[in-house]
Length: 288
Length: 259
Image (cartoon, rainbow over all chains, first blue to last red; front, side, top):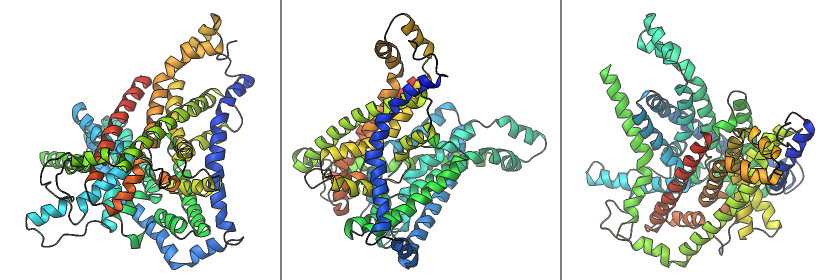
């Protein structure tokens, strides 16, 4: 009787605990074990030992892929931040209707699949695409600009896909800022710029921080967008992992790279977890 | 001050265009009468939509995607709802670990999940079967159900359940007539998210599909590299249309459950 009432009693609590079991078992068998088995191959294939990890850090090409991945992710994060901050600012301080329109504009790309958005950018950016047809038609250029299959293509596509993950956390924090504080600063003689810089900006930083970590982590592990829009010679870690496993059947190296990607991701999230609630930040949807 | 406001507004408009336009560009392309992707489209036609319906590859994969997404939504909703009950109402050692594990498919890069499942499912002779795709998509969708159901479960007034039990209803009856109706919006939102996760999923599906069993995104992925005729644009338009409606529905249901 009264299964619900005595939640403080540990015995009752333990009965509810059984409900977690099916999902946990399911994940243990079909998620945790496959990850473990695969990552373990980095230490066992072709021979037992650390040879894959040694080879990774000893091979220029691989180290360059890692650096390249970190660099591109950093660039994407910085650009997202630059554009998302003023956008979120408008959203947080506009009229209800304007804010609603801006929110929907952020959510629309959120709603369509990554593959579709990536394909759309390919259609827009390729040599016979929208932008080049327009430029050629207007006689502004004589030959198509290369906008895709290079760093520019990856960055444009990824910034578009990850923008909501930057805008939404910043917006959430800005919504909670008491604008009277800024007014107080102005009354006390601060110039508007000074009041913004010394009062508003510091208060909005937690949102910027949460968004940046999200965007950075999501771009580190990205695969679909760089594979379609990026330069195959400057591949990101996700692409190289797939090539190692799918084309070269080099499970040892593929797993070693996956382990590095996973560790970097978890490290960043662990740092982030001390500052923001990861569950909340991931409440929307993740990327590829 | 007004120049500053004007600049900010102009920036806002440009950003809205940047965010929304790419998704919309595909619509005119999908109705093009030309064989190649070109701007502006030479004329209007429905031929690429006809291709989807008449081509066995496209139509079969649409059916496959739909069935897998429905089964994923069902399986993920059952497992996820049970887990949400355990996490919200249970007090047990290792609870935070269980919570982390249940949310981790959202956090681990999907490429890593894909090759992990590829490695193991092949040796279990699962790869290439519908079951493999359902299981894989359920793993990816579980966190969304747990988060959504968990959120609505936290808002349930436990005294209502106690009242029902005091009036003589058993635990199952209480669940059926008191708790379930209260958390139903959360469960529905979770199920819709699970459906969308499966419907849109491409990376894991590439690894687990076979030439005889491909979901819609996998066929699209294979065609993108060849990327010649506007059929892909038509498929993309349909996909976007479907997901937008479902997402709007899920968000609507979610809002109502939070109220």
